Length: 176
Image (cartoon, rainbow, N blue to C red; front, side, top):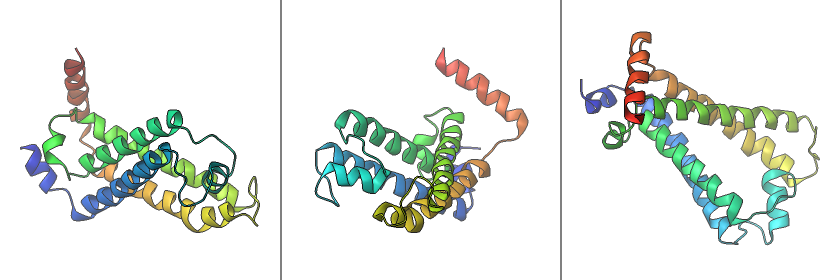
């Protein structure tokens, strides 16, 4: 069966979830690239931006933002590939790469969501801060929702146990 046929047989709900996760990660990656230029939208300085986004003071420098943007954009692409939305790219990659990258994305999003739940209790976050409200109403629910969706995308295409060994052999052959 060709890759195009396999991707066409993925349920529409999985393709939609992959698209949603990929779109949010891509937008987040582009925002990080924008911040790497020195701009601080939606606020006026990096101190406030850091507090608003991270609840702590960290430098918003290209050295930190560009690699993070690269990870976000790569993750977005691989989730979309795993969801069957980029069949032209799918056959050029070892089949284990999009699946495990999607699992890593899911793990990262779920971990951020879990930390957000701790912050929602008021631990390490001041309930009077804007960050607290954003975390409670946007960051945490979005991370938990997208993390679950990413996990579903990775699990929906999991091959039978016998084919995992074949994929590992294929990956080793490609690496050699």
